[in-house]
Amino acid sequence: MTIAVSLSFISTAFAQQNLRSAYFLDGYTYKYKMNPAFAPERGFFSLPAISSISVGAETNVGLSDFIFTTPGGGLTTFMNSSVSSQDFLGGIRDMNRINANVNTNILAFGFRTGKAFHTVDLSLRADAGVRIPKTLFSFLKDGASSGSTAWDISGVGARVDSRLELAYGYSRPLNDWINIGARVKFLVGLARADVMVDELDLNASGTRWSATTHGTAEVSGPVSFGTKGGKEIDFSNITMPESFADFTSALSYGAALDLGASFDILDFLTASVAVTDLGFISWAGTTTAQMPGGTWTYDGLGAIDTGDGSSLGDQFSAIGDELLEMLKLEKTGDNLKKSRGLAATVHVGVEAMMPFYKRLTFGLLGTQKIDGPYSWTEGRISANVAPVNWFSAALTAAVSTYGSSVGGVINLHTSGFTLFAGVDSFLPLMNVTPQFVPVGKINTNVSFGIHATFGKAVGKYRDMKKKEKEDEDEDEENDDENDDE
Image 1: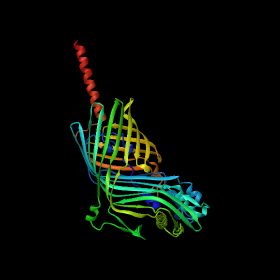
Image 2 (image 1 turned 180 degrees about the horizontal axis):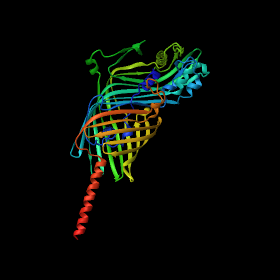
Image 3 (image 1 turned 30 degrees about the horizontal axis):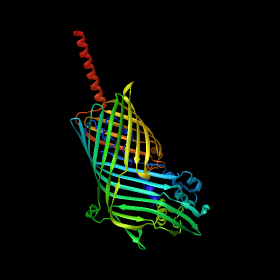
Image 4 (image 1 turned 90 degrees about the horizontal axis):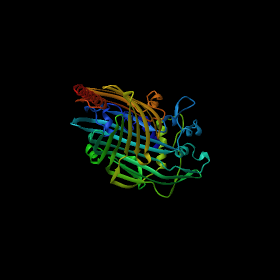
């Protein structure tokens, strides 16, 4: 199951966070989602489906690490005997990680009142993370044939939650050099699952394995699990809601807060800091489970068909079934309430304007996702240019927990509408299947959006031009006074 879930995230390419390549981009409307102190330059209104769509993922493994070409020219999984252990395990990390997120606006609008800017938006979010140690893949591939009699497969984990967010944001200048902002969010939890295997030790015993396990699981939302043999969860017996009323009765609720500030340290230097998703959801309808204590026997690997005749889907399904047998869970609670915190994100940025061309800036952005074992860190540098007031672009490069990336974004922001498109890394898009599915490490975020704009534009380049005109007028007045004297 864990492998199937992991590859599902890779192949469907969920999004990871907001478009960080656009953090310093002039005229980019949705900067306020990364730092609520960043007010859009104009009032805006976004329509469903086209306002902002992001798809992507960040991983340190890829689809090509698990799928191989057979001697006959077909495709098979790493379990096929034609794939050597060395070829397969050579590309696998000690801890294989996948973090993913989808964030899509359903409706959003913003408007200015005096010096303040207000935003209201409704969005759908889903966060996910998977952790798989290399020893699990080594065991699945080699098992007893490797000559090893003991395997430590601790650390397997998977987490996913989905929610609706209704948010109100407010930003304004505190004085001439400080801007502050905050967003208050009302959350509706749709579904959540969290599985963590703290201990999984397998020891060979003849043709069977003895397993010592310790782990926990929580599942919240409009789904219930049957049991077999008493308390053991039966994953083949899952009940979904039969009516809309059943679905809404299982919803959960919570709240969160985003905080941000920016500081114009010098005329050419700006610093900013923000923390988002400080909050929680009280999850209703929670089923809790744990792995049975003590030691039990496991038949091991007999269900996996590695032959060329089976499809990739069948092979991965067989691997998933075998993992479910290994990671058996016993129900400990049903229909409970569990409050769980959100995964917070911290952004710290510095942007410098170039003295030889003021419409060119360089920015350095540090991002830290705080999510326990699914946490990650990134440092991103960007070159941002706005040759005219209605067009801007950025080219970025980053190093993170998941490796390096090179991205870019363009933004057309005229009076009447804004259109933007960007990616946090071009690299995964250069190696794809005929179906345009990336086969290597994904580590990117592809974003696109369009929305209507209204009102007078306010931005750093317009403010800079206004200040330059005021300075010129002041100089002319001083010259006139000197002439009179």
